[in-house]
Length: 514
Image 1 (cartoon, one colour):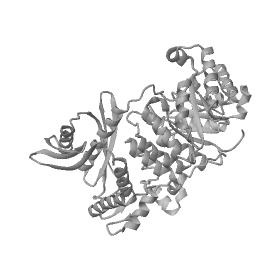
Image 2: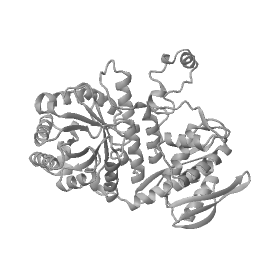
Image 3: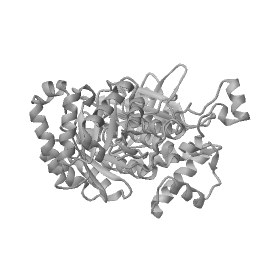
Image 4: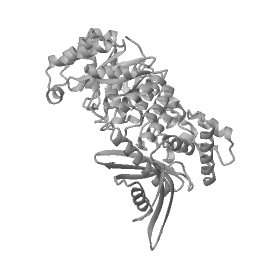
């Protein structure tokens, strides 16, 4: 299957959400899936259907709604998993079953407690069973880069002969280096002739910071599918970053003559959405989508960019969809302009929903002299991601200053009832959080608290990100407002809602990635 086309397999909704506190609700997953479809990824791994009823229904909904991408469900090499996986993805116009089992001596001895012969039999049986449902079957050798190479060749050969049409070679624990990984791919292609008739895939983790480099090394040796995530999200140090893989191929096409089908101008909007729904901020110096990726502070750099952009920028911000921070709407903007902006974000609202959202926009415009793209995005995300929350912050008041003890009062709506609570604290945020805990009767531990600015200026909206935990369950929340204390309250309530959801939807038998 010699070709210069590289399939992009996005596993943000499966492997990405395995990062602590990053589980997404079914509605959040669907919204991300719609944006991945716009982005043009070839395959969306929508989840692990047998892990929970919630995940099964989420994968099923995505399979029914998404039309332009293949939809994959992850399954262990067991008939029960594969049956459940097929039930979830079968409504897709292009369904895929992705089944896997570990092949390294370490995993066979300590996790599977099975012999090499038993695992080879399971590989053949699982792939053949999946083929009863669809011709689109992917098989992964978990922990492939720590697997004896001769045994890895046998496992791959058996999977191909059983009917797998995609073979995935994962660096499950981010252990390999580019030269070694390239040699593994070369050895497989040399010793398993049947690989010429299937797509060879790679799935790299970033424990040594080499996930993207390893993926690119594999592409050079013939891999034609890369499994990756938005923002490099994933457990431990994360996965290969989709945006870095894709833009590396695009910018350095002279050295890497391969292409993808991505509409790269949607990279930044998808990155922002994933950050919003997971509560995981993108580090400022993150390649491609970080806040500093196209920032120039040094005088010599600024001078060069002003004279000619290519002196210090190897790609244009517009190529990845980064807005120019232009003013798009203000307090005098009408309904038509605001409706067009909503449609740019992919929302078509009923009249009542639109009027409510438009009113919130006007309230924001009254607080700020200028309203920027990022402000509109934050407003939309807050409105649509939190619209069905159990806990809702109705109002908050607080007082503090030199020589007085900070105090706060909150009004929280939950289960169709409104509860008011007041508390004092070491500062206004501390008082607010104590009042919210009292009102909701929920007392999680605050693990982290961070503040950032959405735009510039003294009237900018502040964005607060919090991480909370209780009984081993972790969640993250975000909130935005021109008042940083109000933003803090919104973030805490958002985190409480996610914590409640995660407790109600515990996962079982979730694999730790492939």
